[in-house]
Amino acid sequence: MIPSSPLARELRRRCDDVLERHERGDLVGALEAATQLAEDAAAADLAEPVVRESLFTARFERALLLTELGELDAAAVAYEQAAETPSDLDDPDHRHELAMAGLNRGICLDAIGDHEGAIAAYDAMLARFRDADDPVTADQVVRVRVNRAAALLAVDRIGEALTAAETLIPTLDPADALEAEQLAMCVRLRAAALCASARQAEAVAALEEVDRCTAEDPAARTQVIAAHRDRAQVLLELDRPQDALTTLDEVLARFGGEQDEGVLLLLDEVRDLRRELAEH
Image 1 (cartoon, rainbow, N blue to C red):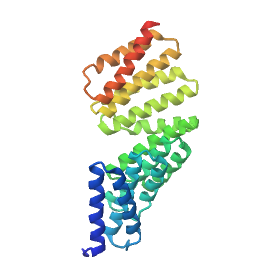
Image 2: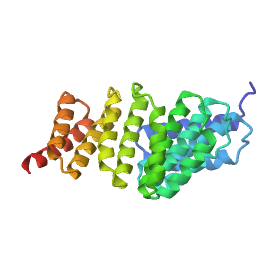
Image 3: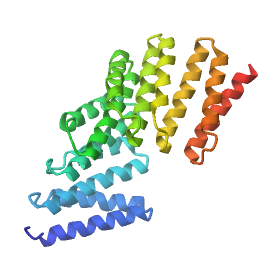
Image 4: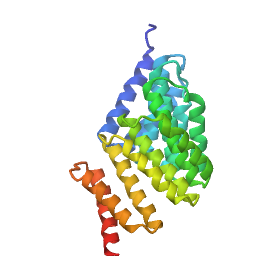
């Protein structure tokens, strides 16, 4: 292995400084340091692996910090720059880092309402990494495909969203903790697209598929519970209030021993909906 140059070692030291500032909550100071580090690393010899890694770290940290500071427009641009950092795509670590940058860019664009921009970002990521076979990048590809389906629905490209969700559902393992969350999201997206096509009865049936999903992980539980809430709401649209109540009662009974704070908040929403139904 060729030894790193003094400049490369200094850039790596500065990366550690940015990470330490971020960890202790000095977001503004970390952002300033990351911005300067990215400029200096970009001007250095990118033939050195340590320099390239430092450049990616600086750009990605800058994007994360902008996200935490609520500057999502700038964060989306920063994630794009991180994703464009010269890297060895044969290295799984580099591959999944670039994929994560592309995924986060799309998430930021979705969050600010630029769903068409998000779709373009997801498409760019898929063009590079659709066939990645390492588990971490493959998981990010799944997340991109699910997010892309949601973005299609958000811009009323309903048929495309429905096709995207229906294509994904058979490929996801309901027994896998990570994939179960994405599967439940796909089930919900499929049902939403069916409702948008005035196919509520099909949506009710489609949402039953969420019961295949393991709910060991809080993120998966959240999506499973949300799917049952969605089902109750569609049943109400079909003038089936008693079935809606039964659906809500079943999910409350199933998850009555919940401890996770985020899931508990969603269960409170389910209880509020049940209360409203019972009063009418």
